[in-house]
Amino acid sequence: MELGQIGWLLAGTIGPAFLVSFLTCFVVRRQAVRWGLLDQPNHRKVHVTPTPLGGGIAVWAGVVSVLALSVGGISLLDRDQLAQWLPTFLAPHIDGVRYRALDVAVLLGGATALMLLGLADDRRGLNWKLRLAVQFAVSALVVIRQGWTLTAFIPIPLLTTALSVLWIAALINSFNMLDNMDGLSAGVAAIASAMLAVFLLFPAVGSTTAPQLFVAGLLLVLVGSLLGFLMHNRPPARLFMGDAGSYFVGFIVGAATLMATYTGYNSNDQHAILAPLCVMAVPFYDMLSVMWIRWRQGRSVFEADKCHFSHRLVDLGMSKPQAVLTIYLTTATCGLAALLLRRVDMLGAAIILLLVGCVLLLIHLLESAARRTREQ
Image (cartoon, rainbow, N blue to C red; front, side, top):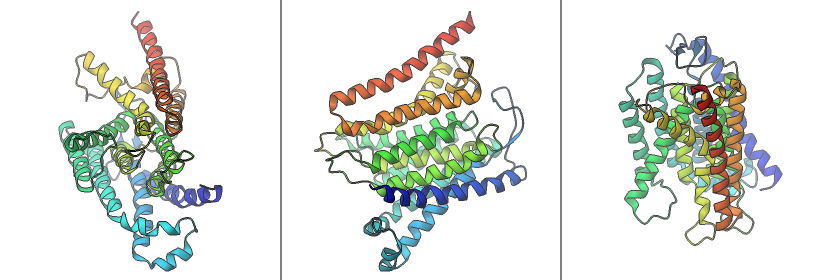
């Protein structure tokens, strides 16, 4: 893509989503107490003053408003008039956007259902079994209804479908668990989404895969909405995303990764299917390491505590902003590694995976050393 085309794409996706989310956050902050959305400090949380919840409503508003208006407008307005108004490079994609209007409707419907689930959890607190059941049900519905499945080259449709549902549910919970410090979960989600968008927009030279403007645009809209929210969530946070936001973000990212195409059956870069796994390495590392610690201590893996990746970095002596920045940089490192997957052979892909693994292992060793020091 040319520089001017990139500018148009960013202005039409990130810009309006940022504005809607940023402004909606002011409304949510003013109404949070009235709506029963106030996060009280306790022994397992790092904030010390009551803070409004409901930032997820603003993230939801930014994404839904931009996607609904843009896709709805393209679907309803006259094609020839649209071709005159839109930038030249976007006009040929009008029919493609109209074809995928149902995909957007299903995506936003499922994401809205999970946002409302999270909102109910923010207000009243729901049993973890009910939350998981709804998450898996919504994920299964969209995967089966739309046929969104992992590109895993597994000739067993039932297994591929099950893995796809598990992938979305895992991302929902990983971003939910990561939401434990100011700016953390939303920032990681913005970095990861931006990395995936770049991967989809810039195929390798000589590749037969065209830039995937639709899914990349969807991810960039999410990036814009998250950035608008982060203006209110940066330390010291004046608004928290809450479960409503983490459920919504995790679902959008998970579904978007399934909607994208990373390689083909006859392609020489089939290892490119590992790109989403590399980009999401940090959220998965946090989720799996936390569940392992809780299980090893004989506690429920769904019990909230202060043993997350960010908390462990603070235990190393970092300040909270330093811990968040470290996780940002780790996410960016893994994401940059993913961008190389289309540009290397199988040996290069193996080296990239080892690089990502070494980054996470290094952090684990540092955490373990600090933990042993405390125990002595």
